[in-house]
Amino acid sequence: MIKKIAVLGAGTMGHGIATNFAMYGYQVNLYEVNDEVRNSVKGKIENILVFLSEHGLIEKNQIASSVESIQIFDDLEACVKDADYVIEAVFENLELKQEIFGKLDRYCKKEAIFASNTSSLPLDKMLTAVSEERKKRMMVCHWYNPAHLMPIAELSYFGNMPEETYEEVKDLYEKIGKQVVKVLKDVPGLVANRIQQGVAREVFSLIEMGVADPESIDKALKFGPAFRYATTGQLEVADMGGLDIWCTVGDNLLAVMDNRQEANPLLKEKVAEGKLGLKSGEGFFKYPESERSKIQEAFNIRLINQLKASKKYI
Image (cartoon, rainbow, N blue to C red; front, side):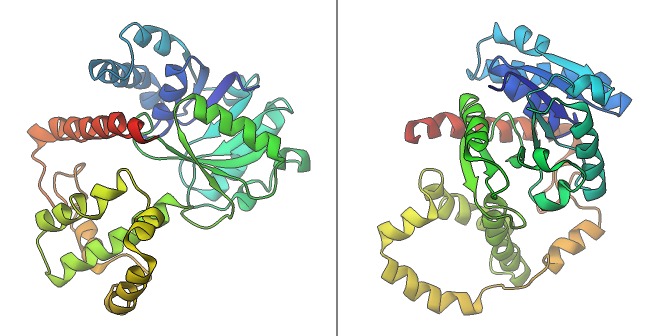
């Protein structure tokens, strides 16, 4: 049974993953090599928990106990030596992940399960530095950002591990309120990101063609397809509408839709200009520096409201 968890990397994803487990009473060791990030992460975690409490997702008395459940480490071996489950959330660099898993194989007890939060690197490449026995206890466990609000968790079942090991991890994620997607084949992007990129490709293309302005395109998505997707998956939507209708529309539209195999030139132009979105102050929309924190909070509140509403359909 998984009781103690180690999270490697306290950046964008790692501290949210650690917070999620701590909220549900798990003891979490959080490893970070960067001094500045390591020294500030407890404050970030506490801010997340206060925010969740203010919006009714946890009780106020859970804040202190959740923070106390997380121990911060700058020594990898000390962090993971007694962990039952170790998930890495470090940079998307294959060599770095191979090195880390090789060390984990030496440092951890033989029963420990290893996981990567990647959605772009193949599992079989990441486990080259571990023993044959350990390969049976390694998987991809991909979270969505922000980890403490997005309910999805994509878990790999690629044939390298026994079913009971997979079920043990699945049970862990369900206990912390995640909706588990069982991924049977190791493809780049797994499931959710591939679907998201398919939508994004056409959205960027519509902007590039000047079909509508950014506000209108986002409105079309939010109050059209995404309005249904909040409660209904694409395959159910197709069944409800009639597969004959979907087949006809597909024949009419797909031939004239974007099918390029790389990022849209408009997107590349924005990046080259330093217009990266919220973090730079401008992307497709503008984000004045004085308002960025409020904009980010409003975004998170929308996710919280959606999370609360979605519980009715689970």
